[in-house]
Image (tube, rainbow, N blue to C red; front, side):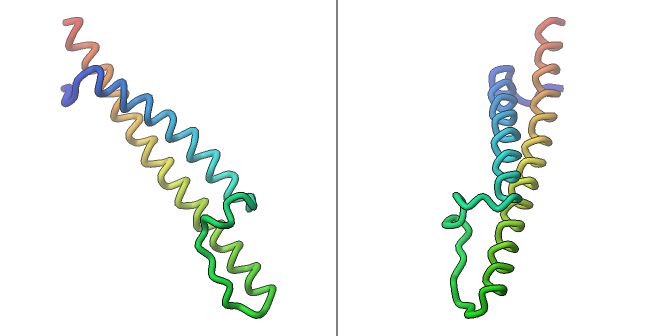
Length: 95
């Protein structure tokens, strides 16, 4: 049973594919500690011990990577719902 139109489901399908690709790449880059994202992590340098600061940065990178992968999973769910809606609309039109 379609609950959105064919164009809407196709739009959501395309956006979901882009979100899956982008967030999986971003999560991978954050997981390997890409230095380009250091300013986006919101790390405050209050530690005087360099090892503790390094571990704090490493934890922030890992946390951000997991958040990206969770969002990627949500886009995957949206992809399957949009795909189901797209085929439901296609069947409704052809019947």
